[in-house]
Amino acid sequence: MSEKLPLSDFYKVIDYVTIFKNDKWWEAVVVIESYGRRSIAMYLWQFRDGTWKRKHKFHIRSVDEWNKVKTAVDQLAPKVYG
Image (cartoon, rainbow, N blue to C red; front, side, top):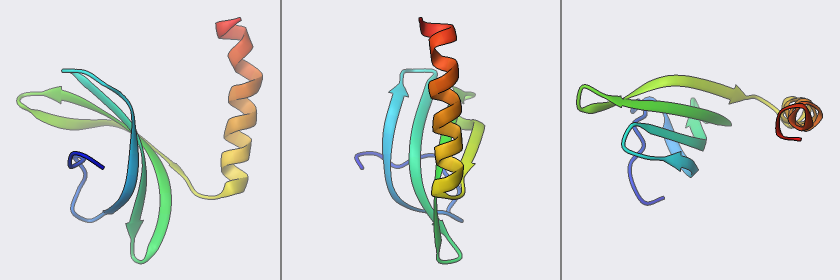
């Protein structure tokens, strides 16, 4: 972790991986903790008015849910990317 993510202090950031970042967009996968429970979330922030604003957040609540998401993306990706 090299720089502080623009997340609420409500969440404790355990670790993260930046997927993409430029002057306007920042996308990351984050391990967060709240109320003693950890989860993985995907975030997309947009830089506007001098600060990062959350545009999208997607929580993955379990390994089973992740497997469903991964299977769906694997199934649909060839229809977009060949």
